[in-house]
Image (tube, one colour):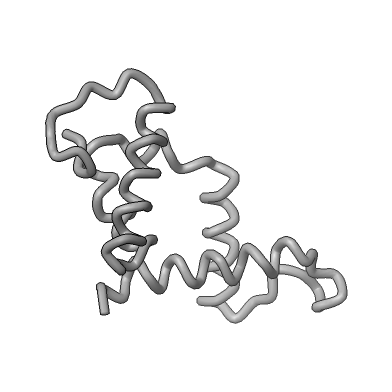
Length: 104
């Protein structure tokens, strides 16, 4: 079932799934909904999440969550922390906040 097209649709490959995700993103923007939460909640209706979650991103999310929960820095100090890690940390935090906060 395609949530964006509101009809049954056979997804022939991952490209079709990505197309559905893009349509859901566009709907969220147009409707003023939280993009992360909207896509997260709807993707369960048309795909297996394991097909979408890249293992390297899952490891990064686990690393961020572990560091937060144990108050253990992932790197020895700020000077040794890659800028990309800092950027991704804030992206992860914002998306998780959207997913778990509910639409405002």
